Image (cartoon, rainbow, N blue to C red; front, side, top):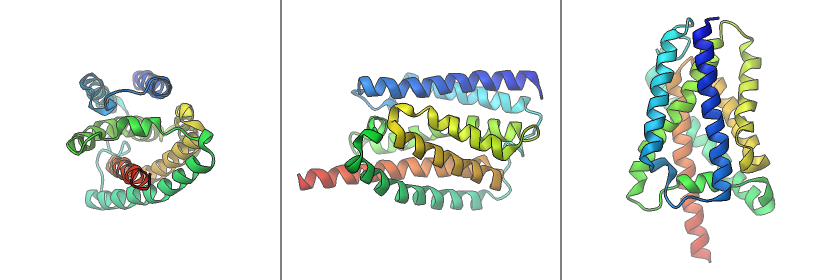
Length: 227
């Protein structure tokens, strides 16, 4: 296993993991006044991190195919990603609504609220800004971690362990938040290993987030109308 690739990946994973955890904690304590996806400095950092991930990909002996960078069926991956992303949202939204009503202490939706568009004009910007955020996570936790280490580890056990770890990073979102993120991470890992494609998990993740934001806005508008 190449040392430079391994050390570089661990450093990036450590940085992103800490940033994810700390962001959730900070949002709990002090909700932001502006959409965190639209903060210029945050987007610059994401783009730099994506560039570093791509650089690590060139150091990986697994090759671009194992990393999912050369999908064999791009149109099929896009179709599967759209359908799966919408499906995840259709299942997750009513379940999350039920949890909030019955066991509000199990879940905090502060992260979702912090990235939801404040106005109609923000929708295109938020949808666009979601893409690098999603790409960074999928490059790290699916492409480089699963694809890059696949020749050296029991990949099924590794995928489960990585998904649980990713879920634990979302502890500030409550027990349900951790469980939901873990399940989605497992599904994304399964998709990546099945299709051996970064494209399918990026599309799935992106569509899921967009659908969740849209459902959240509909839910709040419905609640406001009833109120």
